Amino acid sequence: MTTDADAEDVAQNALIRAWRMRHACRSADAKAWLRQIARNESLRAHAAQRAHATLDLVGERGEDDAAVETVPERLSVDAALQRLEPLDRRLLALRYEADMTQSRIAELLGMPEGTVKVRLHRARRALAKGMGER
Image 1 (cartoon, helix red, strand yellow):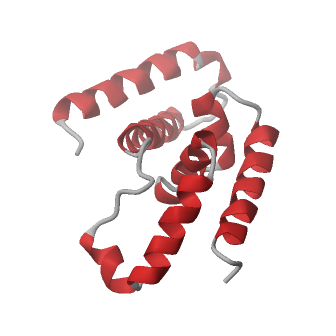
Image 2 (tube, rainbow, N blue to C red; image 1 turned 180 degrees about the vertical axis):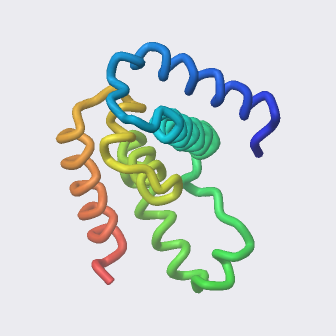
């Protein structure tokens, strides 16, 4: 949930970024340039808020998910997830639960993007193998 203080922080960060990058403004319409910076800062803040809220989502499911999956399928997925390494479970949660890009995950975890890409590929393959490749 976004508060007024969060909105003020985003506005302040946008103004700071605009001030630091003022030499890069080549647009005749400085308002449009500033609006784009504010939009980008808002998107960054939203992504960061989602990342903090979803770092440990693996294994937590809502009532909606139970209606979609059958009990055996859910047990199979949970068991396969538990067999993965903790980092792989975290990567899958950030990618699919938090809907983060590979580059954002790499930035958040402080690892190369190529490493994130390879680990996600291997984690998906191990998950499919653990579930009997349905």
